[in-house]
Length: 318
Image 1 (cartoon, rainbow, N blue to C red):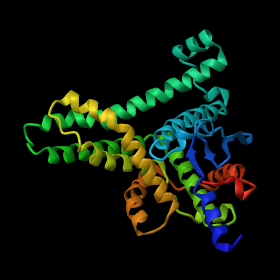
Image 2 (image 1 turned 90 degrees about the vertical axis):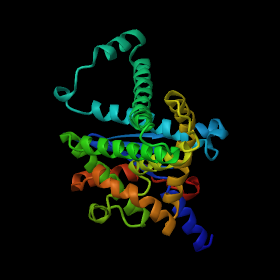
Image 3 (image 1 turned 45 degrees about the horizontal axis):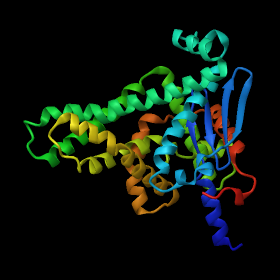
Image 4 (image 1 turned 90 degrees about the horizontal axis):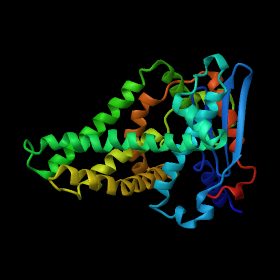
């Protein structure tokens, strides 16, 4: 194998790794495995699972402009499971008592089915709240501009601006919550570890801490791209009726998510002037969703990364 081909395969491995910050840990996902590493009073607790990709069973799921929606929902499900594992590692005195709803579900279905039901409920609720807050609410508020702005294009731009303002405001407000600060610090450690690995440097605390906490494939960047793409896609629906306009927003949302997913994939795979431009706004917004981690957090990120790096480069086709 020549050096050019080898370099291409190494790049494919690197761009297939991503992670997610937890309350006191990190979930890292590689080409073949995903790992959760949580720091506890007794040290690091790890959980490693082989990836079971839906596209292996249903190839159509992996097609362009279909995979985006599927992977978005799957990422939310994985994130909820990782958060539940992270919360379970907390000392018993710090763990919250299960709610009446959680207790009822466990009594009704048993612990294993209850966990699956709660994960499904959390994912559906999370998606519903996101759609309501960032998609439907701006559309509803923009409806009051119908009389003030006659031009439909300007009205659509105003709606897009409202969407971005609500999104940025939401991130800004949640960033002020005290325990979220540590989540954002772990988020920074995750980005630093991935950046260190992508440069081909040894995964040491010293090397990781030197890297940037901002990364083009971050979920924050993805959501910002969704905001921008929605302005373009939603401009094709110009009905004056508010409820009809909201209905079309929902119908077009899978297209918005799919296009946004392909854009962020492109930004993660290539490094050129175009990808730097499309990544710049999201990376700037990461100033709100990342914090400088301490060395202990970097150790967690390194452990999570090491657990998902494939031993055989040929197994890591992107």
